[in-house]
Image 1 (spheres, rainbow, N blue to C red):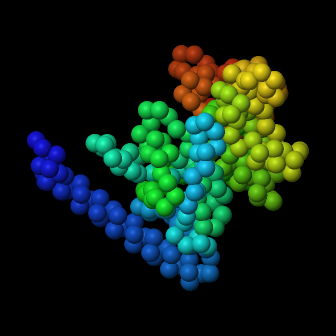
Image 2 (image 1 turned 180 degrees about the horizontal axis):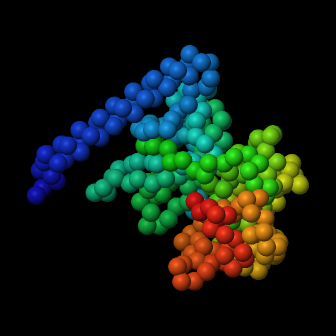
Image 3 (image 1 turned 60 degrees about the vertical axis):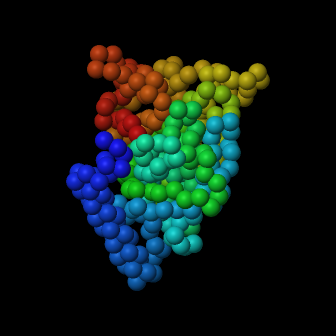
Amino acid sequence: MTSRALFTTPLAKGIGGAAAASIGAGLYFRYTMSVAHADSGRPTKAFGSGPAFLSLRLESSELVNHNTKKLRFELPQPDAVSGLSISSALLTFSWPRGCYLPCVRPYTPISHPDEPGVLEFLVKHYPNGKQSTHLHSLQPGDALRFVVPIPGYRWTPNRHKEITLIAGGAGITPLYSLIQGILRDPHDQTRITLVFGVNTDEDVLLKKEFDEYERRFPDRFRAVYTVSRPVPGSPFRKGYVTKELLQEVAGGAPSSAGSDVKVFVCGPPAMESALMGTRRVPGILEQLGYTKAQIHKF
């Protein structure tokens, strides 16, 4: 069957009709929400709880290190905000030239949900990653379609006395969003420890922002970095995120603290497997005394 015939089958037509209906519903939802916000005087939210199908123009593309770019997109209105909750992601959609199927992948913004007019992402390029390759190829003026928001962890201020965030590589983005949301809330006094494991010194992303948080919130935020392949004279400790490192950072038995502590994990599969364990082998966090209820994996 040729590709032309394939897209004219009843099934394809049905899928196309459903997609059109979904897009129509998404556009109607966006329209009614924008009218409601205009009437209320509050900033327009670009994304609600349902489908968005929103195409945003790339304002700028900045190379951060050897494989990561900061992409800054313009929201529909200069005073619009994303409307996302902290640590939420957005599902992106593209159909790069030469690909038989579209590419769909979630990315967590690093801009604050209340920042007007813009949406920023840190995107790591993977050699075989079709979507990351496409995003790195975008030039200012190009557009990217955002399909639907994916809710993150439902954070409640002061629910936990302290939290430990463990990130690996590009997994830093949802954790950065969580840090940003907590520290920008004047009513939230949660203490935060970030453990960030990367391959090289260049991969320590957002360090300038973390340094500023340590300066502004010395009693509430600290960042610990570990690099598996540091350069000679590196200021960072050498190694991986190990049981010994977490024991040093987190201190005593967490299980006795109950709901006062929480651990958030986001990183490559090998790191998450080591931390979370398997059905047969307990992970590092369980060995340290954390219960399943005290751990959240993005």
